[in-house]
Image (cartoon, rainbow, N blue to C red; front, side, top):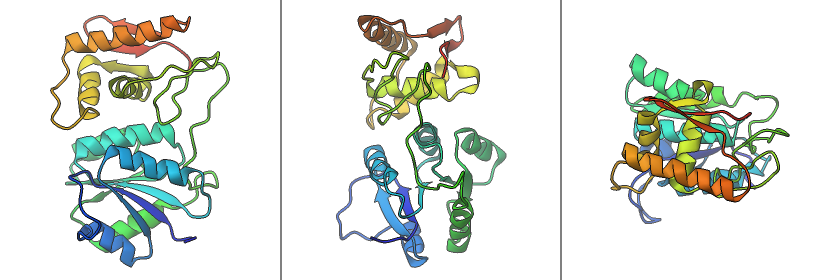
Length: 244
């Protein structure tokens, strides 16, 4: 088993054959001794990180090299799932707006997408500094009596340990809400997050469909005998009123 640091490199795009030339970033990191695992879809990104979550032999990092908005969406998700995972986001420029967006999404560091190999490698090694003695990703711990997302964010357990499966859109809704300041998010932010997590080419969600999604979630929890602590903020958005 290799003890080289593992880089799970997220570069969304069309499937490529195993013989296709690897990306510039993958080649650079390979040359500097990293074990690079390339992912061209959200599904493969989460499968790779789930695989390495239980392995403590080598440090693991996530490098997000897709479009900025998609990088930020995945950073929010990964930070909720793996609190100790170093996350580095590649940015198109060092504009203040881009950097604020990246840092607010939960990334630990950023690097210019067109930057040199030396800059990228230095950024990764800086991110390998121990965080509470452990750099391998670990599942987010659940606190007794509190709500928590777990199992790849597909279920939302309640304090009585009843798990309710979530669809892709519901998962994106809850991730955005639970990682927002004060657990509040605007309808526009929630609709953008849901659209970003849907299949490529799908239509954007509107307010009517957002309301249907919320109603469906409420019914799911009612069927389990518990009320989802979700409140509508008049003419603005939604907030989560439970303990997390």
